[in-house]
Image 1: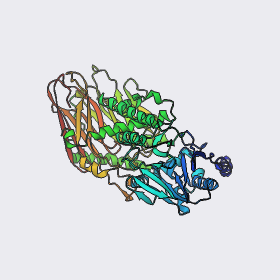
Image 2 (image 1 turned 45 degrees about the vertical axis):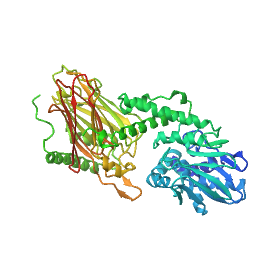
Image 3 (image 1 turned 60 degrees about the vertical axis):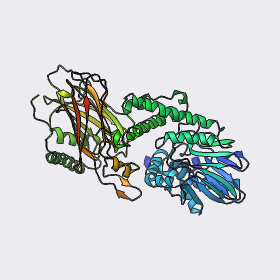
Image 4 (image 1 turned 180 degrees about the vertical axis):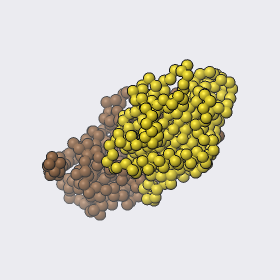
Length: 313
Length: 283
């Protein structure tokens, strides 16, 4: 009896909680962000934890990120329609984070092209069935109804200059960084950088599939661009120098894990002991930082086998 | 001390015995109703392994198990097993059984120790398929059994997609590293680490690009000796994570060679050894 009551109540609740998106924040003329919540994905925020960027060109609109679910993608498109009468001509998947790409299906339904790095498409093919299930478990089936990992079709293999909707954009790729196919989108007209997975502010970045050394270098290179404002994949938009905090965290993560590894600590001890206390106030520190150490430790271990000479046969 | 070696010597015999217990467990697993209570799974495993022999469960003074309550990654869950028998006890820990109730192959490993081990401690990483009890059961040389257990929240570890670069993994397959946490002290337990480059494919992971299952191939037997005497042996399966990694102890009494022999499920054999001298850091 109780169960059937819940089942009836659930859709009403879901539509109440989700009918409104956070209001878009203007960042520059014709550039907006729909800010994500600075929290772990959960039923209260419907997994809407990632920033979605909107760039309005002379002839059409470019969207960076597609939301958390099919329904979320639909709501985004409706809200973008209220911002501009121009058609949405392109969506960009900066990386394969479930909260960034699972709204793809809503864009594809309208025939909107979706651009990503080829490695991101591969990553989605290998992992997104799983991350869809994970997100369903976190925020509930009703919110994820009809969602599936629609794959991007416009694939790039490296950095690219594109023109979409009459706007010229720089697609930045520095090699494998946060993920193998992580890209950032720079809008030279406004000086706004949408950093995607390459940066998160006030929240520990997810480095579980990262190449830390290349990522740190990429952050330094992005700092040399004429940036006015940076929109991280997660967390509030900020000044360009906030990229240095991300680089500093990653450097400390790499050094701390290296030290623990070289001192002979086992995996569990390393995970518990590599502490980057100055970033304790960042969201998800307790979970994501430990996980970052765990995977970095395993990468150091795997490097021991990179050459035959390393092993004592 | 004069007990027969626990593991049969030949690979064929070993493989047969390995198959026998795997098959026995699979039969048990399929025989169990889908909704079997958690305790029921363990009861069936326990009966298969130990019949009605008593197992002491409040055994912190003999065996301790450490695992994270919530795993960072279900495919690489670190586990530590510590035993606390006094060295002057006239018994030693001869075997440790590692059981993960809800895994497709619940008996993931059987470790064998000898007095040459010095301490029957072990650290490795395992795959965990579903929220489960993890159990380490110590069998003493006089036959007594002690168990430590912990509940772990992790899922999908056995069927997690195989490593990104299977081709590179194949090229490195079988490379090993054996090192001692020096400087070496004679007459005492010294910590050693064995690292094996091996994808340890479970056969349960689908390649999402090809939609094909990556065939099972995993390390199944490890034998570590010092100066020709066994210090640690293990019968394992795909429960052990990719790139199997073991930390254990051995007691060197004179200069010698620490040697690891590894056999995988394709009957391919790998070897690694390191020379041990007092006061040095063998690497």
